[in-house]
Image (cartoon, rainbow over all chains, first blue to last red; front, side, top):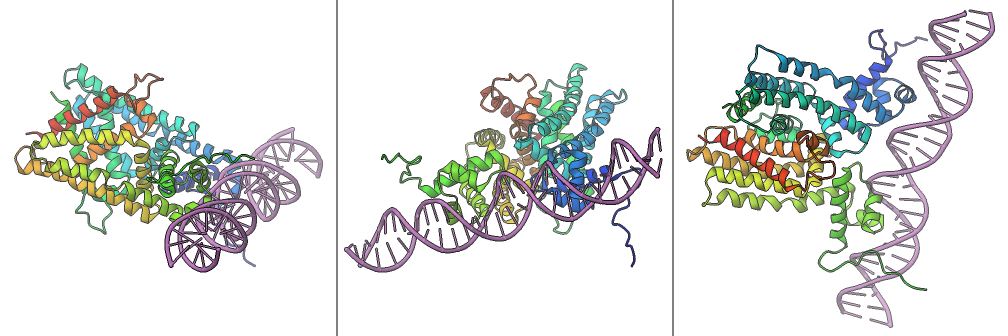
Length: 217
Length: 217
DNA sequence: TGCGAAATTAAACAATTGTTTAAGTTAATC
DNA sequence: GATTAACTTAAACAATTGTTTAATTTCGCA
């Protein structure tokens, strides 16, 4: 009898635990929290179901582990933009818009789940974890807007609402295929709007123009 | 032995079926689709669980029935704004902003669920029903923006993205308590931001100013 | 009053859920 | 090589899910 090769070979860099995490991100992203069962995840990751609880305790803790693991990714980049002395305030805003469009497009399913979770607001622990990410990012972006006012480049503006417009517009356009088709109503059925560079550019340019006309003196 | 009064007396205007619908809206809004069980709904409505399937068939059909029942509420109002000859284009936009802020604040839980459903995009039938509502509204608002360009009042603008900014900003601010607290960071713990008229006004004024500076020539 | 359709009920159904158990294997340490 | 801890497994657990059934009651109408 032959011994067939196992479906997964754990290499040493990404061990079984982080492999589960990767699969979990994928499934949670596609199906949401309630929509993803532990058994789905176990079989998709090719591990015994009890291993997930062995590593992470509970389903909710698993989700929290995911959130934590992605937590610091964008904060550093945002901080970098804010403190860049070579950029004017409006240039920072423009860079930030591009960064966010890119980020959401790249991980739109994940962002989708973060937003569903923060909206529905069950699972308090999880909500707090997500809220912390949003908070850190929000503070930095607000800072950029307020800096622009202090140095005389911008008109006075409610920085929190400016953040809401940038994030809100991007989310609205990109987190739902249905809505995306409404926004760009001449969408070719075959082309995927989320990989189409023209659409990405369109949204970016629009938001920058919107911010210029509202913020600049 | 006494016969105690039943928990609910069905009056003739809103019979048992529509009573179930009302309760279902409430529970779906608070807990989402997956988060609401038929048993929860049955006991909240004070009816036998089998009655719900008797009236509506399945859980999903029940949700669709809700969506249909709310479908035409805002379309008429929007159409009215668009065709109002006494208003300039920018006045129409402003009226529309106020209308949407009001609408979302009034039924925020329901809008929350609509958005979660349209984001996750499981349950194709349901998604199509929700998409149709969004589509109808979207078309009208886009029309207002495009009218404004044709009559020389507005600069050329991507009407779809303007809609996204209005809807996206309002949703981002009002569909999550967590995010709302980030936007208005000096929030009193005790006051409810969603009933506070100051916050409602703030968002409305901001969006109007944003649209004026972007759209007007 | 009596017939038949509609309404209502408690119970059962079958499937799935997240989690735990208890027995097993593997691997490293002394 | 023995001891211990980490890992892995199949099975069971207990709870919940949406839906259906089959028996019964209610009610309008002839």
